[in-house]
Length: 324
Ligand code: UDP
Image 1 (cartoon, rainbow, N blue to C red):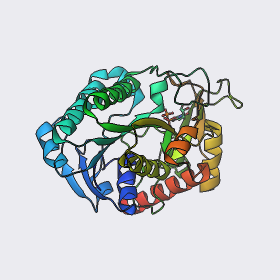
Image 2: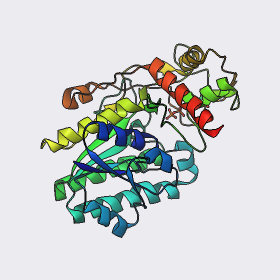
Image 3: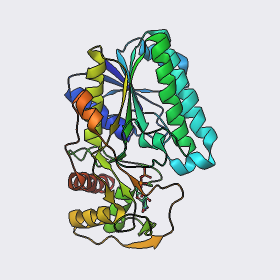
C-alpha cells in the first residue's frame, strides 16, 4: 500500500513511517516542517506542505491508498493561552484534510488521538467507554476531529482508526531518530538532560497528589510500540473492518519519582531536581486499559519503562555526538 504520512517529519510520525516501511508499505511524507525536522524523514519522499493547502493535499492524495495523520499542535498549556492556533490547525486543518480525502476518494485514515479526550476521568485504568470530556482546547480539538471522523464515516464511507495515545516516549533503537521538541516539556527528556548536565534541574510538579509517593502517575508507551499499532490499525481497516477507536498504553502506570529512578539507573547519574508546585490541569493518574486494542487489532506494548528510558538516552547521546 502507498501511505501518506502527514506529519511524518515529527516524533511519532517519523517512527511510524519507518514501521510502515518495515511492514512492506511505501510511504510519502507530507509535513510543513513547522515543528518537524527534514532529517527525521530522510530516506522518504518528502513533500513540504500544509494541511490547510487543499490543492497541495489533493495532488498527493491522488497517488495514495491511505492516510496517517500526525500533524497537530500538541502542547496542552499553549492550547489554553492560544486556542486560536489549536483550532486553526487541528480543527480547520483537519477538516481541510478530510474534505480533500473525500474529494480524492481516499477512504482510510489512521488518526493520532490522545487520552486528553477523556479529561480527568473518575477512575483508572481508562477504557474506551469512559466519557470523553476534555478539559483543555487541545483535548477539545482532538475530540472534535474524532467526531468529524464518525460523521464522515456515516455519510461518505470514510473508514478511520482513532488511536488514543497515552504518554509517548522513548526512541528508535537505532539511535537515528527520536523525540525533538522545541521547547521540550516532557518528563523523560527533561530528566535525562538534567542528569546529563545539558539542561536545567528538573522540576517535580507536585508531590502531594493522592498517589503512593505523592507524584503523578502516567502510562508511558514506547514510540515504536505506538508505531506498530498504526501498522496493525491500517491492516485491520484494509481487511474491510469497521472504523474504531482504541487506547494505546501499556496498562501500567509509573510515578514521576519512579521515572526519575529509572533515569538514574539508565544513566548512572543523579537527576538534579527540586519540588515545584503542581502544573495546572495535571490529573493525579492516567493509565490505559489497553484490552480493546489487544482484542481488536492484536496489539500490545512490548517495551517497558527500562527500554523507553534506555532508547531515549541513546538518542540524546547520539544527538550530542551529531552536534559535536
Ligand atoms: N512533569 C514534571 N516535571 C516536568 C515535566 C513533567 O514533574 O518538567 C510531570 C507532569 O506533571 C506529569 C508527568 O511528569 O505528571 C508527565 O508529564 P509530560 O509533560 O511528560 O506528559 P503529559 O502527561 O503532560 O502528557
